[in-house]
Length: 462
Image (tube, rainbow, N blue to C red; front, side, top):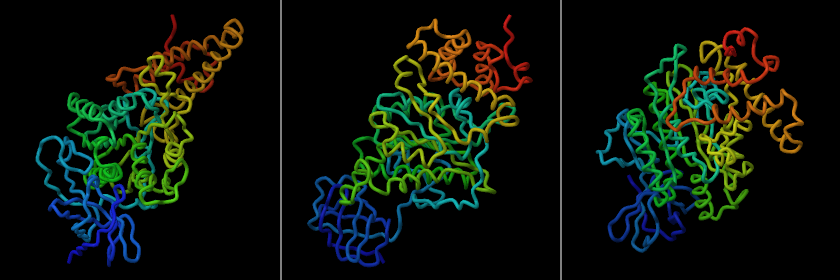
């Protein structure tokens, strides 16, 4: 029997206090009926002996507590899922936003999910092609990995994320792509213009047919930003582990999620941690990121690309700092490259994919991938050093080899890093381009690639 209480005592921001409760559970759903007959939803956030703190999903502004009744529904927040969700657009609460009718759910799942047993986890080791050279060639994404994008305010991370979502695919060794690939794209706290940009990008390119889009706007209830990533990941888990699909989940912008978490924490009068964020921020982010992975004996997989903007471009800020501890690397966007007009402005040197070696090589990408990756990275690093030295001492102070490396660095940024927003490069094209750039350098400097690979792949200069 449902329990209904008329003891709503206080409203504080998005929180509601209900007194005199009994047998109420954490995360239980609540329906609040106001004196005018309207109903609003929420969930139990905290329980004491006789009081429950309810987190409201709808805006609590102007909420009259006189005559309000809170009904505890005896269940956690669930979302109805079905394969028909592919090709659809939903709001931050999981309601249709594309003018089409609601889906008929095949089953209902708790949005909080369940952690994957570490023993049941399968190691990520299969290549995912994004069509972007700086990722595929140097910071390879593998199935089941968590690889965040660290951006700054004003950088084109929205376009970058949309391009990855459109182009990503699981490729076989022969270059063909597997058909059972899907994208779950969840945007939190974005503007209407950004939302329309994402939706139009998917529709115009036809990528919408294999995607599920969730969009929470900046003027939508702040609490939706906390539930949206969990709704998106629950959708991904259903498609991956029950429908056998390989799912790429893109969450943007995680900074807006963390700001919402901080707002709710302040309303609860919790003791703040670094920069006012709650002390449990690390644990909370881990509950999202650790839902990526593969399960032994299951065909599907979940790969995550969270996107976050670093306040003041500070990578020691709590959000990127804690994210870096949990995930397996990061893709850094550079303001300097953006100023040069280079898109995507991926800063190769501080970027890292810790699992890249598991997804490359013969039978996955190409036999020369590992050596080329190391050689290109080392050559670019030395070229950057040579350019810095030239600024201080003048170009005449550089050796002939250093001048070649400086030339390589410029060509690398202009031809390898720079890419069209609709340019989808295959891994073969990326590796061939790497060899073409390496041909700038003296053959004696190619110390990280095998001799047989040099003979086979290095272009012969006439």
